[in-house]
Amino acid sequence: MNNSINCLRGKAISSYIRKILLICSCALMLSCSQKEEMQIFLCIGQSNMAGRADIEPEDNNSLENVYVFNGEGNWEKAKNPLNQFSTIRKNKNMQRLSPAWSFSQKLGTEYPNKKIGLVVNAKGGSSIDEWKKGSKFYNESLIRALQAQKTGAIKAIIWHQGESDQAKWQDYADKFDSLAYHFRKDLGTPDLKIIVGEIGKWRDSAVQINKVLISLPNHLSNVQTVSAEGLTDKGDNSHFDSRSQRILGERYADRYIEMNQN
Image (cartoon, rainbow, N blue to C red; front, side, top):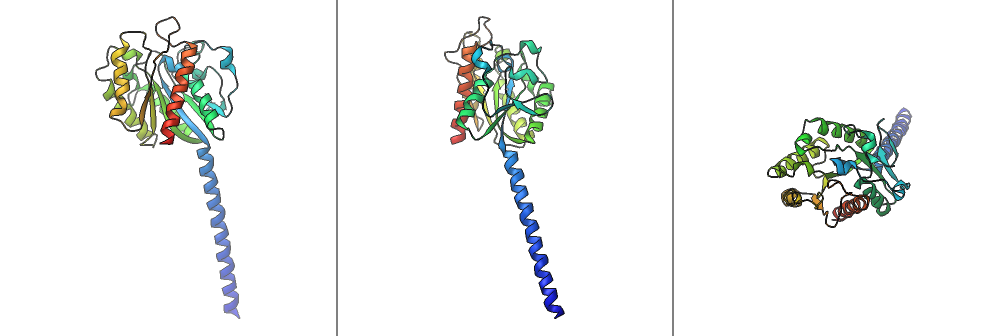
């Protein structure tokens, strides 16, 4: 009789343990699902990523399922200027329309069931030397990306920089390779997608650095570039105008969608 009771007790305990394990398993799956919910993009570089183009009426539209990581370490509905929360930016009133706007707008349309999260941390006038591992710009951007990563997954780095290196293009590729390696390592994603944009082509001095930028996918995996062909400046010979920023952002989005399908 006692053996039967002990057997029943054992079965009950075993069943209870199984239920507990099932609940824990479901909780873990839910946690992973929630972590993957936000698709995060780190948008970094210099002034054209920060945005210097005028914010026009169409750039004030509300974007569905697009969020920006704010200064309090939370997500809020994206609105221009997106670089306003950068921890390394110049004056807030200098931050205007960047390619991250139309980039996220197109991704929101392409992936309507996903939440798109932008971590925008650009600094106007910065050279690639100022972005090397251990520098203020690198560290600040990494810290923000790691904070954001707690609520989602970093899907890609969107890089637009090179204007400050037009006369120092010879070793740019090596410096970029190092930058890409360390961001991937420190973010825990060795195959993280990186998309690089050409700088404006209105100056003859842009030719060599653009050749370098275009060549980056030749020696780095999961890196692609977008063209600045046909894009125009805002009249200052330095920064894309509003139309060009929108086109550039869409090109970034097209490239990401293409990479995501392969």
